[in-house]
Every structure is written in C-alpha cells, then in structure tokens.
Length: 366
Ligand SMILES: *Cc1c(COP(=O)(O)O)cnc(C)c1O
Image (cartoon, rainbow, N blue to C red; front, top):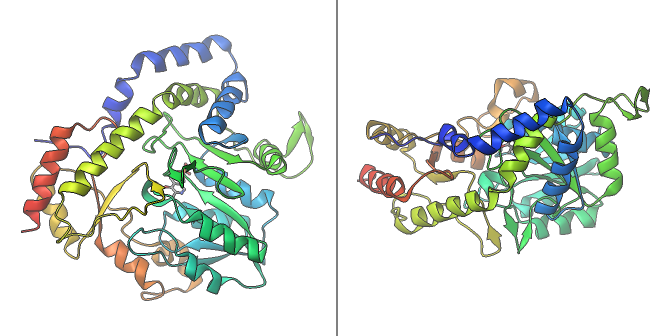
C-alpha cells in the first residue's frame, strides 16, 4: 500500500479540462503579464477573502516583503515575527532591512503567543507578523488589541490559510494587510509560483501594486525603485479555475482532520488544539511526539508518507547564523521542531486511506 503525503498529480488531473481551457484562453489572447485574468482573479480572491483589495504578486515571500516596504518599514525598525514559522516570514523582514524580533508560540496551537508579544515591543517596533500556521488562524483580536495600543501594523502571513476563519471572519483582512502564497502545494496552488496581498487599505494596495511593477503607475514613468513581482496571466487563469473548488477542497481537509482528531490516540500523541473561535483549513495536520522519527519510520515501512514542518527553526538555520542565536534561544520552538510530524492530508485523500493512516499511527504508538 502507498499513501502519498499530498497527491498533487491527481489533484491537477481532476481539473485537467478546466486547466487546458484556461491555457488556451491565454495562448489565444497573446497577453501574458498584467491583463484581464489577473484583474479578474484579484477581484474574485478579494471577495473570497472578505477583503476590499487584492494585488497579485510573484510569490508569498514577495507579498510579505512588499507589504513591509509599502509601509515604509526599513533599517532601524523592528518587526515581531513568530519564532516558529517557515523561513519566508523572517526573510521578508530581512529583505526590508528591518530587525527581526522573534516571539515564541503557544505550544498547543503552534501560533504566536499574544501574551509574549507585548514584552517584545520597544520604541522601534513597527509591525507584528502573525502567521496562521498549518492553516489555523492566530489569535487576531488579542494581537490587534496590542497593536492598536502601541500604534503597530498587523500583517497576516496567510500563506497556509486560504479560506480559514477567525470568529467567523476569513483571514486576509483581519489585520492591516495579508500575504498569500499560491505555491503548488498550498490549499490554493498555482501550476508554478504565485502570491497575493489582500487588504482593506486602498493606499497600501496601491503602493504594493506600484512597488510590484517597477515602481511605475504609468508605463515608463518610475516614481520609486520598485521590483518586478507580478502574478502572470497564465497562473491567474489557473487560479481562477481552482478558486471555484477551494471551498470543497477545504471541506475535505476538514473532514479528514476531524476523523484524525476523533480517532488518533490523544493519550499518546499531541494532537492539534483548535480554539473555539478557529475554523482552520488544515493545510497540514501536525502531531507531536518525542519519538517522532521512530513513528515516521514505522509509517514509512507501511507505505505512509509523512513530512516534518519544519525540521530546523529559522533561528538555527545557517542563513541566520549572523544573528548569533544558539540552541536554547527559543526553547518552545526548538521543542516543537523536534517533535512535529505532518500526516497525509489533502483534497484528494479518501477516507479509506485516512482510516489506514489512523490505525498505522495508533499501532506505531504501542
Ligand atoms: C509558503 C509560505 C510562504 C512563502 O510563500 P512562497 O510563495 O513560497 O514564497 C510564506 N510563509 C509561510 C508560512 C509559508 O508557508
């Protein structure tokens, strides 16, 4: 038996007809960058995310980086980030030239701990990036309250959370601006790279749009030193087809997660904790155990693919050796990275496979 971690091939094959039609539409139009598809996708994705504006960009990292730039965050400014996240959250701050101020997560939810944020604020703090890790929203009311008190921007890293809800509201306009990724394996994934910024702030949206397109509002007139970071027509056309299915795909992920939650042995492993106000979209289903590697090995022997998100926290990556953090700098994150294991989950996974995974995991724990 083989149970893949995420069957992207099957996922895209099931949309073969729609994707081919989208491809033909672009080929026949002869227009490949910043045209009708991007414009329509931006409208549709803004609506989907309950945000007023959406700007397509080249990827999720750029989305976060351009938001920081658009807010004028630069050298000398401090930005609070989770210590437990994918490295892109950190890189966006580094690209802007600002100083990273990592804050530890709540172990049960893996998301940034609002109570620790306030202690990390200084006179130089300009923004907080809240990551909705694994598809579960961070505690946005608590974060917004602190931000308001100190006059800070709140940026959502929603790269793993398309469609997730916090107290009934979609992620994407819960703070000042949000960055999304459409990397192929995300809940809404392109057939290549892609990203977007969503916001209710028209000025921010306009600034990101200008920055993403060579700092230009009018062709060949450059107001600022911008970047080339655009979502292309082809990816936008694919994303428009996929967006129509996103709710159904997220529902399947939720169904799988609830099966895992009810049947995995909660006495022996740490299961994800979902606060009452959260409607996660389960980009990943992550369990925790001290013998994580042994469980992963046993599952692999049964044909079940698992992954680790992530094996090394950003502060211990060679890329950040210059910050002179060491083992012990962020113990909660370090413990998480040693214990986590992501089980197979995805829109094409069937319940027979889910139940096989459950019995293999429970058996591996004995
Ligand atoms: C994927 C991801 C990103 C970056 O997205 P890219 O499109 O790969 O640049 C940023 N933050 C988080 C939490 C992610 O998972």
